[in-house]
Length: 118
Image (cartoon, rainbow, N blue to C red; front, side):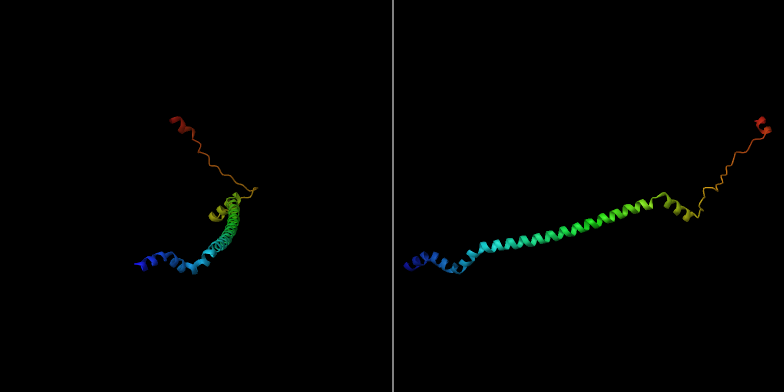
């Protein structure tokens, strides 16, 4: 029995003896965490900077396209363009300002004999 009690008392020494090769890791652990966090922050910053650059260039491209579309809307809705498209589609000739002919159909004039009978 004395031997078992001796082994029980030696358990902390045995644990320390077992963990003694890990002592340098315990000392280096804070440095490793610090180094890892610095590297992780740098990588994250680089990634976010790249995303910001990509989104900014996309935003500028979309603004440019929007301006081009606005110009296109103005060009396609102008009165001159609509008139020329109408003339081309329905094959109407352009009317010059000096040569206009207006034809008006007047109602027929009733005869004098027909109005007296009614």
